Length: 100
Image (cartoon, rainbow, N blue to C red; front, side, top):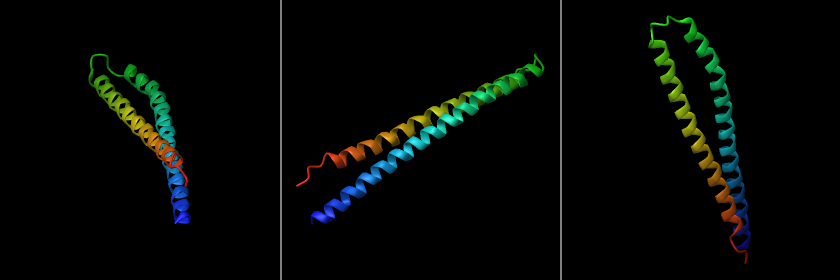
């Protein structure tokens, strides 16, 4: 019985570590996407400056796309941090079980 408990503890710890690493990987991905988004802002600004000043459609189109992207990046970053926190709590829960 003790051997089975030991194996399940080891499995649970590794599962917690893997979930944590998945969350960290997702956060790094969101940070990379954010860096790309802010690099694309310059290209969008130059495109807007070259367009017809009386036509506001490209401006609103660019602004809506930018707001949607920022919103999605915020949601993805929040979900990634929740996943990482869940992995840490899962790992710490396996460590707090008293060994008999």
